[in-house]
Length: 206
Length: 297
Ligand code: HEM
Ligand code: SF4
Image (cartoon, rainbow over all chains, first blue to last red; front, side, top):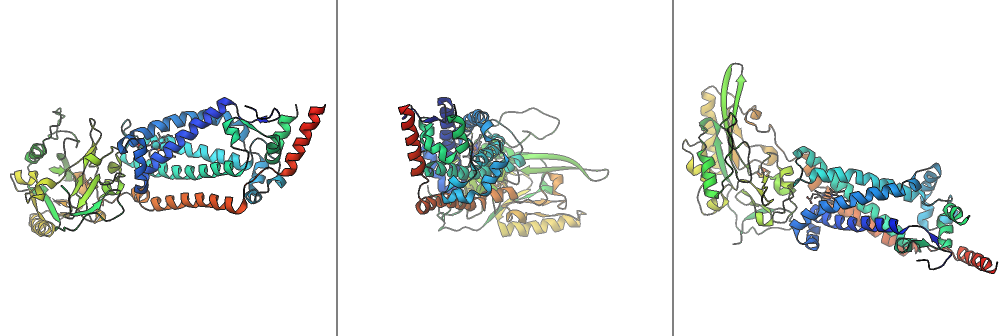
């Protein structure tokens, strides 16, 4: 839906569906995983039909997320390659945090922070998938020592990823006019011009 | 029936019901007296009403080949030469050691699925077990086994049901040579000291008690002829809970909660102090002007 014919398309329906599948499975994974990580979160197991169901479902949700994360990774890869300008932007991230990004180096579809997040999330998944499989002892039989490493890596990578997603979600809430790009795919021209000047120029040229 | 003598409970951060306090018990297994008859293995099956599948003979008396959800104790047979040309047939009754500092309990994520009673017995409550297998990663002795049928973890209970009513464990009751004895832990240590002295007098210079301090001592102890080399019996030299498990189940938990809370609160306070990052009026008006111009053309 375009609220205004001049709005710019930022995400196709396919991209949005892909992102929502990853997002929902991530939340379910985080909640079910935390339930097994710390007794303070154990009551979350009730959201999944009890503790045994939580243990059963978590890895299958992991497979779902892993598959769709890989699709999303390749879909968004091209726009997330780091360039020198992105490192410069990250070097001045303090200005962004202060809320004055208009004076910062002009950005393409994604700014340096978003690109860095993309790569950090990919790294977390790269750690979570194999370590999760090592822990999946119903179907796999790895050595005890390998599973000890996997438990440490899996829980550490999960906590880092949860923190990164907090930042990701907060950024979307903080920068007004962003969330609609994940609901109906478009952003206003003013939004694009303020936050992603190079992208704005590229897509409004024609 | 409630147990009121619980010293530690898995995934529980508040004190457990512990008004009753009993002295530490221990089972002492004197390997030098064991003849490998497996009466204890049979007694364990019988008392706990377990029937493992009948296995195959693989050229050793060891049968079944490994501990199992249905075989909580197992005689392990080792043919070794502690000195060249001196064959010894070492037979060790394997099973849960009932550690004072149990790694299984530390690793378990399900509240109350593993408990340690004040008398030292470590027991699994299968009705609370979720089948994750974390106890296996916690155990330094590779003891718990997950059943392939119900996906719950099982191991030796030290016959906690028998001990609770003043009986000795079934294996102790049945041992025909007196290789397995049961009593208070101090008594068992005294008895072991005598046995060690006797063995040393018979030429086993390195005989000693195996009560590994790395796990706080155990409530199943061995008298070993070659205690300097426990690996001859398939026992770890200096068992401890793996540092990886200590990290995962120790500092990682509060640190993780602290970091997640800090990130969440920082975001909230950032919003409150900086306000939203909205599109500037100037750019918005400029875009509106451009839109009007385009319409006029
Ligand atoms: C990518 C595929 C994934 C697979 C195959 C997987 C698999 C597993 C398995 C097998 C366990 C052990 C508990 C159980 O058996 O259910 C586990 C625990 C856990 N998972 Fe995952 N997982 C995956 C992704 C994730 C993600 C994306 C997160 C982050 C939100 C996550 C967070 C956790 C946490 C926090 C634990 C608990 C660790 C602990 O007990 O200390 N997992 N995972
Ligand atoms: S030997 Fe293993 S299963 Fe038994 S109490 Fe020690 S850690 Fe737990």
